[in-house]
Image: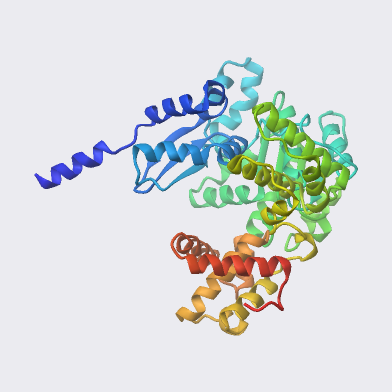
Length: 468
């Protein structure tokens, strides 16, 4: 009888997503609910958290920054054991598939290829368009070249766009895909995802299907090509896919973080093919462009919420002047200021703004390297770098090693395999385990959180002379 009662009580406390939806509608209002919150799908409930999903990164980021904390309060009113909400992307957007079926036969044929096989990773975001791409002297040429690709008589094939992290490369690729998918079979995929599908096809003995699908597109857009480095078998397949697409007259657009001749561990013949097209770079945004972006994002926020707290002109100019590293960091900085304003119901002054953005300010002047991270972590934990990079598994070495790996992932743009190589050629699964271990420990270990914050500030500001 006791076990039955336990089972009954477990059933009673299972949350009802329908009730939560009703309460969200009442709390946030019909307009916000219909525009944003109705798009959330309930996936699964776990012991101490629930998994929700949305269909695009834009919706996920918007809900996370504005509503997720309040949604968690509503959820916890029904079940106090829920400590957090995980918001993931649901790539299989069934509503989009239904819309596709109602289009004309010509358009339906153009997207059937995606629907049948690659819809799960064909990530064209309807929010990244040419219309909302803000241009300046640093990205004007890349923008115009991308629009030229829409003309079928262009000779820009392949078009290779490169630039640093957060400069708008993915936005341009997405905008091209959005325009051309109405009349052509479009494939937009990251190099990392291409690699995943390649390995998966080999394991399932479906390479013929892999070749057919990837060589069937009229427009092939591949993002972050630098992640293909060192993977010889995949590069071989990509080389033949690239040639097959050119032979059939398909348009190819590629993005990377560096020019073709600077790509490391990429076959020379592939780099030669890239260099044979139009190669254009996106420079870091100048002050005028950064200011235009800040203005545009603030206007966008006001359009979604007329009651949004206004950000002063002084802060707008400060952000435009100080956050130089990338557009993504600039927008992230603005989001922090907006969140501060909403939480405390006040506009921060310049001093408070500097505190809020302390890890971003002057970041570009102190380039973070793996060697710097390893040196500072070793100094902090009073061990030698040789000990940390060794294969020994003593507890006093494992935690510093995991901390250094975690900070490398957090503060650099290196991939998991690259991080593994920088830590004495460790496997990427070891890197994943280290990152997850630190993330788990941080939830309950205040001392570890303080240590990581201290190390992070030292790394970002290069304060190697400070006492720890």
